[in-house]
Length: 253
Image (cartoon, rainbow, N blue to C red; front, top):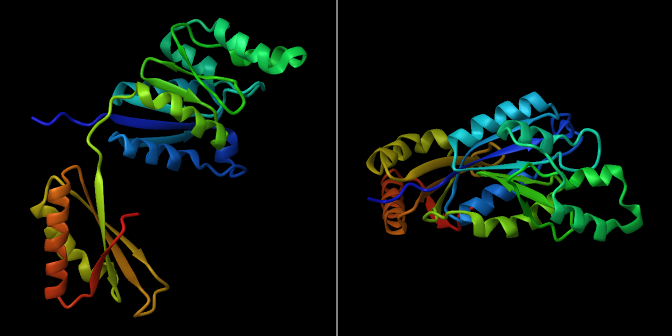
């Protein structure tokens, strides 16, 4: 019996994201990172800098998934409350971590002030996540990985996170590009293919300006069994050809 793939959720924290002042790109980065490891990202939430909401969301997500990744709220300012909220969620104290303190002291020297010292607070039982960009570490506690909101820093932190994760079978994807017709023209064919291949995922993604000859649809077939994916694509192409619909395989998105 095939072992179920690990599952994950992402919790994006920050008033600046909800207000539109900052555009989040971390979710896409994490999604691609997890896909390459065969980990299913099943849920993502974006919430503000409110401790009660962070605690509630985090407890729900960590109970429902193998891994939770948070981004944002671990800097030196008054609204950086993620560490406080995570400690509360786990019922843990929030002391200064000796190793984090040493890292930050080396980084800032004489400019190591009280606000920056806040970044050394790690929930008891947590382990550090290395930050090769600015040194200020993230941390892991249980199945939760707490990382920076700045995309460059968050991406760099993933290098230290990867070895800690249980991997699953990678999902393979193939794309069939249909030109000249919209989704409605291929919906029945795609539905029949999905019903015939319950272990695979079929998606439809339209493109174009809306004029005949310019519109089209990308039909994406995904699954962990590469042979089954390829066989489904061959069958899909055959059905489209029988219906007089032009289609070709292209590189998966």
